[in-house]
Image 1: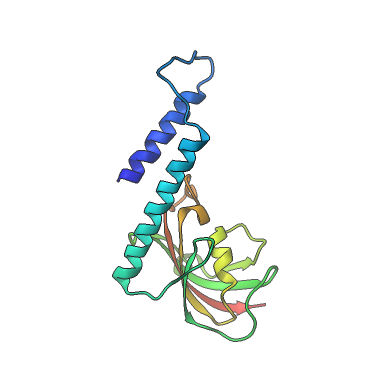
Image 2: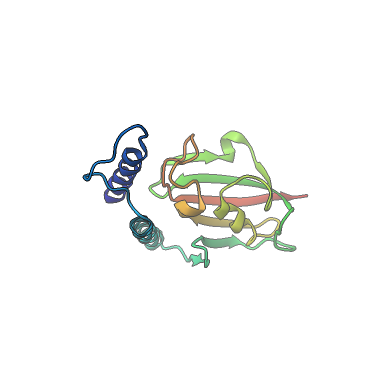
Length: 172
């Protein structure tokens, strides 16, 4: 709730400060780089706390990458790890951290992507590189590696932490 209020306050400040044709008054101060950086650090720390609480509640054995992606390999698969330009077909479920349903291959069919080329969340693209054909994993993707502040314009809301359950079904 506090994070949402901070985001709303930040957006209000940016909107007010960006209005053209209005004279600036002494009461209006545009947030500087330092204030925005501090707000960003705060939001990232809160997201991390929420992710760690989720992992503890679900008793998951997750690993965090240097970039902030959390992953757990459920089934290793066989062959080589996926790299740039590999075609990957996967079944998936995507929910927000609070369990809200976003997308699933049960409705839309398996998703085919080309690693490093298809426009998907950066965290999902990174996570696929930990998999091999036939592999299964859980990825927890913080907003800065997902759809970020705007969401995806569909079912993924603003600043959503995403939980992906992935099963690679094909590698061509």
